[in-house]
Amino acid sequence: MHDLLSRKYELLTQDMIRVDRRGLFVTLDKTQKAKMVYRNPANGEVFTLYYNTLPKGDHSETLGQQPDNVLTLKKNEAAVEYKYIFDAKYRLNPGYEGTSYFRNYKMPGPEEDDINTMHRYRDAIVYTDAHSRELERSMFGAYVLFPYHDEERFQEHKFYKSIELINVGAFPFLPNSTKLMEAFLDEIIMDSPEKAYERSTRPRGTKSYYQNKMSGKNVMVGSLREKVQLDLALKYEFYHIPLENISDHKLLTQIKYIALYQSRSQFLSTGETGIHWYGKVVDWKVMRRKEITERPYRRGTEDKLYVKFTVEKWMKRDKPIVSGGRGIYTVLYTSKYMFDRAAEIAELKLETEEDLVQWREQRRLGTVKVDLNHEQVDLASKVLGVRLKE
View 1 (cartoon, rainbow, N blue to C red):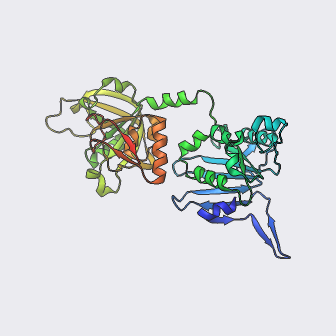
View 2 (view 1 turned 60 degrees about the vertical axis):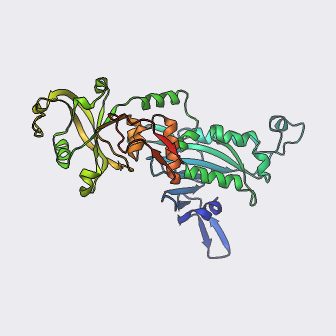
View 3 (view 1 turned 180 degrees about the horizontal axis):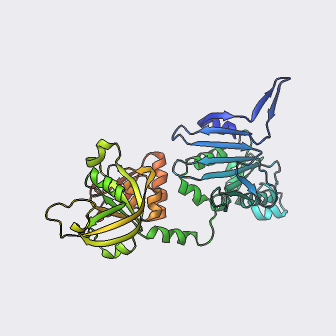
């Protein structure tokens, strides 16, 4: 595995292979520090290959589990790590005619007991969250590496097809039979966080759960006219907008968060453009503009109806949502699920989890762009029809 990874990725550190100076021997260190750390030159992501040990924090609440290799991937867009088990097994069932193995699979392959071990590893190894103390299953996939040379034929085996279905299965792994394994390593390393999550078998009902999470437009992103508006909003923890800019007044009852868009035209000199700040709405009122005393009104607007949102606390994103060549003219609505995952404003208009996965996959390859019929992504101007293109 190290040989395959080191061909394409930069080795940063390793404490797995040590030379015994007393003779011509290479010793594999089986301590908890036995690991190799790599960096993907395409995006700077760092990942780790552990040998004969589990990553820190992973354990079993029942019986001890110790797979041969664990590959841990840290994606730029995700807070969690994605972990995969690769366990070397030295048994090949030849699948002779007349045996039950031949009747089930029609060809040689790994032993069924070894596949069952992969299920056990994936389900038994858990991670304890440092804050909530909740247990989470930490392994996203588990695979047998077994001695077999005919990779093309093995692609028809049930235990190879099961990788795509449930992320448990087997790969032929001999010195001259590594193409399937190499291709798979490249896939999971380049996966977006959403695609990595999709590979794992999720509990029943997960899809409808996320559909419900994404369908609620509970975040309103409002555009700021000038820098002083941002300063006052942050100081007094509020945001105001003309009532006429909210096309459907029913939306007021479902807005749970306010986010602030800082345009290039007004904020480029400050060095901060895009969406940096957001906060949870604790109250809102329809008021005359002259009743909003935190900021002076412009002449002629004193009796105009505005909505004033009171924010519990403004929070700053770790990474801003950048314009990506698009802006927000007045206001845009999105779901909190999409808002938390977006890196560009155009992503806030994606409607489904499938759209988000496609966008993320293409963006990691550097080939995604969005075609809109207006440079301002704005619900009030009825910009519709975001589509993804390679």
